[in-house]
Each structure stands twice: as structure tokens, then as C-alpha cells.
Image 1: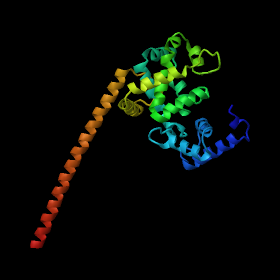
Image 2 (image 1 turned 60 degrees about the horizontal axis):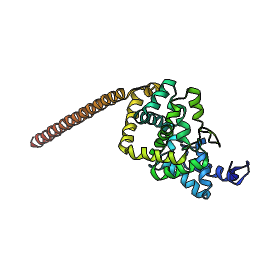
Image 3 (image 1 turned 180 degrees about the vertical axis):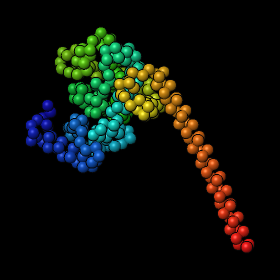
Image 4 (image 1 turned 30 degrees about the vertical axis):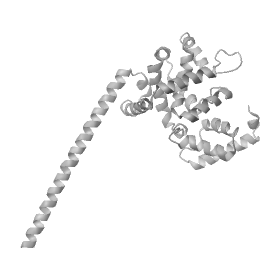
Length: 277
């Protein structure tokens, strides 16, 4: 509803189209994803077209954010994000995790709008803007912490909700007087608390877990239903087999080098014999 974007021929709409076309030309593999429009529009409210272009390119490509994986036509990173948030819920807000499991509410029902737009789709702009201040400073992992904090600060209410009420809650219609209205100061404080508590090594561990489980258990729903102990068992066995494979490769490589060395010695001996003859 911002005046920059009111009307098809408004200044903001024209700028938005140019920036998105330029980004799709820069990275043809990614092209255009609808979620990119929310983020680009936010940038255009505070900077020039050129700066908005480079900002969008940066959050897409830089290791700190890597959002291109969420905007790619096949959304390759979205399944990873869904898995990681699901596991973090199980670890840090188990009551919510178990309640959602009982209601058959999967993280895949709300993760797309969380991650693809960086929560710009979910909240009033004034709330999303403050979250993006924190996100740009801390990087992609902070999005997981926001996702955890939303449920943590509303845990008591959510535990009293049925399926329909939870789905309505997840719309986050932050209008005046709406019972789902978010206290932004509380949300940021809890998000930062999670961010300080969850170490980078834990995120890396979950990425590794996802990679292994994706290969071993292709079905997304089946992966989401695994207990922590089942996950550990599968990952432990995969690592054991990988270690064994590497050991055998080294053994075979050493054996091949020895055979090659023997072959060279035999060739050298034969040449010497021929020369003597």
C-alpha cells in the first residue's frame, strides 16, 4: 500500500520491474521468484534502483545469506530450511513441536512464507523492517531464530489452539486489535536470545544431517517424523560407512601405487637387460 507502488504505472512499480529484470539477467539460473519482489520493494523505499539491485544480488549470492537457493525454480534450499526449523523446534520448543505433530501441522505449511520473503510476507512493514535490520547484521541463521521466537513468545496461547486456530494464527494479520498482533520488542529479544544460544556448529550439523537424510529417506514427511534418536542412528551409520569407504579408497590407492612402482621397476630391469644384451 506504499504510495511508491500504488498503480501499475507508478514510479515504484517501474523501478521494481527494472531491478527484477536486471537481477534475472544477472543470474539466469535463478531468474525470477515472486518472493524477490517483497524484498526489492523494501530496498527501493530506502535507496536508488542501482543500490537496490546490488542489495538484492548480495542477499542472493553472498555466503552470509545465500537466498538464491530459496528463489531457484526448484526451491532447493527450502526443504533444508524446513528440516532445520523442524529440528530446532523439537530441541528448543518441544511442547510446540509435539502440539503441531498431534494436530498434523507440518513446518512445510508455513516455512515457504517465512524464508522466501524473509518474513516480509507475514508481518506489517514496520515489524518486518526491524527484523531485517537484525537479519542483515547477523545473517541467514537469524531467520530460524525468528521462526522459533514467534512460537516461543506465543506458546501458552498456541497450546490451547486447535488446527483451524493455529492456521489462522499463522496468517499474522497484524491489524489494530487483532489478537495475533506481535510485540516486536519481545520478538526481537527472544530471537536474539536464540541466536546467541544456538552456535554456528549446530546449524552446520543440521545441514549435514539433512544432506544425509535426504539421500537415505527421500520422503519429506517421513523425515519430519523421525525422533532425535532415530536421526542420530541414521547419521552415525552413514558416517561409519563413509569412513569405511574412505579407508578402503586409501587402501586401494596405496595398493595401486605399490603395483605401479613394481611395474616401473620391472620395466626398468627389462630395459637394462636389453641394453646389456
